[in-house]
Image 1 (cartoon, helix red, strand yellow):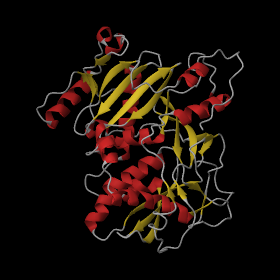
Image 2 (image 1 turned 180 degrees about the vertical axis):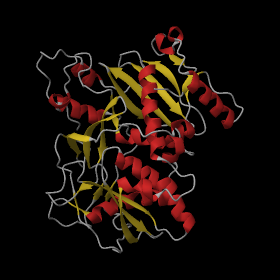
Image 3 (image 1 turned 90 degrees about the vertical axis):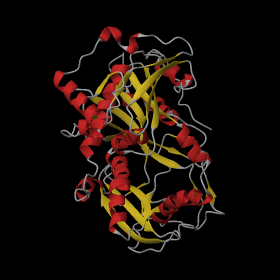
Image 4 (image 1 turned 180 degrees about the horizontal axis):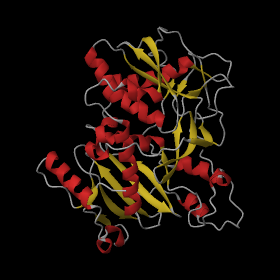
Length: 422
């Protein structure tokens, strides 16, 4: 399979010339000089090694046949309680209660007096997924002693969502830290300066509107299968139920986790993840321009987020500027790509998936050192190529000692009890 990256940045003669260069290189095939690969250079302690190797994000390069994507299989789940403590069970799973078509939910209710907000300045990295792996070694254990987890990549669903949407993103870049441990590549996001500034400079209005999405969930979810929503309760964004799925994208075996809003109340519904539902809010649509923007931008992220773990349905509450839900609409994830086909030059699922697949190939061919202290930091900004730097024993290290110790312990030894987070 061809990979769309080269040694050295593209020239600045414009996107058309860049595309011609890429197309020409594709015809010639990949010409790797293994003797000069950056990954042959071992990073010394605290050293940052820059690379001239880059990967293009031009959409045209990924507009080809849809890659193989196996139906995601849920292999487990976990819960995070009101104190953000990890539990290896489904105690935080909620059940969907279908609202009226025009429910007039007041999304502002409770913001001042019944809201516990998670501290998003605390970076949890992959810690919760790693705790799940240690508590469920029997579910992921591979016969291959060189790769005991049995997958190529471990990450959060949200990180993969960012990769899927990258070819169409024009505002915000990303930083993804990658380390290899026992044959498996772990991907953890690093907050960019842009994202940090946005977080620090949020207005009160922005903070309240972020709350509205959680409040909509409270109006439409119950704690029991035959229960009723408690709209007068406290909204606590520390709480979460997360699915853990395995799948394969092209030649890449993936294990990732993502938060799930709720499931169908009918206990005879299909097995997870096919019974899960994603809940969203969005501004009501009045004009063709607003609908076009909704299709181009919001539906792209909704589709990517739900398609990856195999969540089949998205329920959206459309609200006015005062936070009143005036309409509720259900979208089938599998039909979103048809819904946007009437939009001129709109996003394409095949471009999203092929870019993600090729990026994972780029990572696999770049990250050679199997050492949790070595981090390959992949960086991307809009209208630029993907680049990377290498760091050793740095601030970017993210695999904790308690996980590394367990994963490198001989299998014949008695395992330590699962680690919890207080």
